[in-house]
Length: 177
Image (cartoon, rainbow, N blue to C red; front, side, top):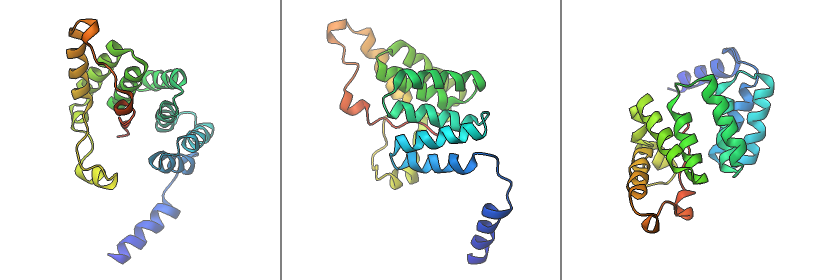
C-alpha cells in the first residue's frame, strides 16, 4: 500500500499534465471547504485568469460569491456558467439556492426541477462519508424537499406562508459535484 501511495503521489505531483490555473483551482476548493470564501474567490479568480475556459473555477467563483452574500454578482456568474454548459445539474441547483435566498421562489423551484431533470442523483444529497467528514449526522433536506416545500407554501394564502427561515436557510450547503 505504501509503495502504491508513494507512486500515485509522485505521478500526481510530478508527471501528470496539469493545466494553467490548476493549483489555484485546487487551493480555492480547499479554502471553500474550510469556509474561507473570500480566499476561495481570490483563488478561483486567479485560476480563471490563467485559463478563462475553466468552467469548474467559474462555478466555484459563483458559489463563493453566493456564500459571501454578493448575490447579484453570483447570479451573473451562475448564468455565465449555465450559458457555457447547460447540462450540469449542480449549477442549476446552486442557482436555485441563490434564487431561494433572494426570495425568487418560482425561479428557485424552476432551477431545482431543472437540476433534478438533468441528474436525479442530485436529490440524494451528501453521502454518509461526506456527512461524517462534515460532522453532519443527519441527512440535510435536498433540493427536491425544498422545491416540494416551496410549492406547498406558495399554494397557501399569502398571510399563511412561511417561505424563509434565514437561520435555517443559510445552512443550506452548495452543490459541488
